Each structure stands twice: as structure tokens, then as C-alpha cells.
Image (cartoon, rainbow, N blue to C red; front, top):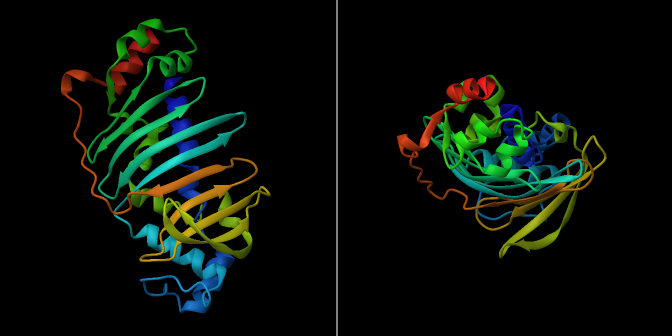
Amino acid sequence: MLSKRLASTTAIGLLLVAGATACGDNDKAAADKATGGKAAAAPGLDTEKLTAEEIQKQAKDALAGATSVKVVGTVNKDADAVSVDLAVDTKGQCKGTLSLPGTGKFELLGDGKQVYLKPDTAFLTSATEGKNPQAVELLKGRWIGGAQNDPDMKELTTACNLKELTKTFGAGDDSKATNITKGSAGTVNGAKTFSVKSKNSSGGEVTLHVATEGKPYPLRIEKSGKGGGQMDFTDIDKALTVQAPPADQVIDYALFKDKVQAA
């Protein structure tokens, strides 16, 4: 069913946003003990004095306080790689694309009130297993509106709200990260960074690259092992302007499901 395919793709694509910067319970306790429960003041990240846990916590807190961010990268799922290029803010706005090679892609748009998605023909054909050409023709070049009202599409609403995304920190696989250690200085997209490394419960290594100048935003996350990939965080706190698509280009999600079932 289309809803399950879209929802799972969104969840996969935003896996690193939702989990990889999270401190586990033990990590948070260690950081709180060292900082009195408060992150060190910006600007600048004193990598000499701060522990790996403190650096990680500051990155988590900084991103949680951001008003917007653009996430660009790829996450591996089995033999496939989900590509993400999505800007999202705290007002429930989002704009971007998610794609799965061999399956197709879809655009995702949120204006703070409604969530819209526009799958391409390849994605629609794959999602309906080629059995509903009428549905593919119906949706070609059109947006689906009202998807957030469907329980199977809850991930889409979460994906379009930075506040909701940051609430999931600590809830994923990487909340059990262990052996957090300091990495080294480097650069990400021209910005100076310092990395911290940890192991997640599935045995993969997570490398978090944190900005050392200004606010300690996470600028890149790399994961090895199961569900591995790389995500870059750009355009942090950059205002996002989104307009809903014209009404004559939108079909209601509930109506679409009815037509697919009747096809």
C-alpha cells in the first residue's frame, strides 16, 4: 500500500535526525554531572576542557534550540540507499525530496497547517506494485493533501516539524550509545569542527562532527554498520518560506485511498 511505503521511506530517511545525536541515559548523567545540568556557553567549543560526553550533549542541545535546519544525505536500508534533501523548521514547515534508487522519489511539503506529498510516476508504480495504473494516472503531477490525518502517515507530520523531531532524541537505537570518545579536529562544508565517536547497540560506529565556532551545532553524522550512512546539517536557523500548492493541483489523501481501493 502506498501509505506504508511512503511512511517507511520517511522514517528511514530521517533516522539519523531522530536518533544519532542522542545521548544515552548514562551519557546524559555524566554530562549533567560535569556541567551542572547546563550546556557550556557559546560561542566556541573548548574541545580541550570538555569531555566527549559534554561535546555530544552541547551538540544535541544546540540542535534542539535551532529554528530550522536542512538535512542532506543518504541512509542505507538493506541493499538500498534512501536519499534525503529536506529543510524543516519549528513552525511545521518543510520542503524537500526523499528518494529510493530503483523505486522513485517524492516531494514533501508542509506549510504549517497541511502536509503535502507528490510521488513521481516511478514511485507510484512501485508502491502500487504496478497493479493500479488508474491511481498512477490520477496522481501524476499532483499533490496529495491531508496525509497527516492518516495514522499510517504520522511520520510525515513528524518529519515536517523540527520540534517533534528533537523530541525523539534518546528514543532510538543510538540512545544506547557507549564508549563515547573524542575524535579530532576537521572541517565540514568549510566550517571548523571537532568529532566525537561512539558505538551503538547494533555494533556500528557513530561519528558526530560538531561546529567549534559559534553555537556547537552538529554539522555531520556518519554511521557505519546496520542503517549506516551520512547526514549533513546545513542552513541552520535560515528562514524557510513555504506556500501550499494550488488547490486544483491537490487531491485529498482519503479520496485517493478510496479510488485506489476501488480500482
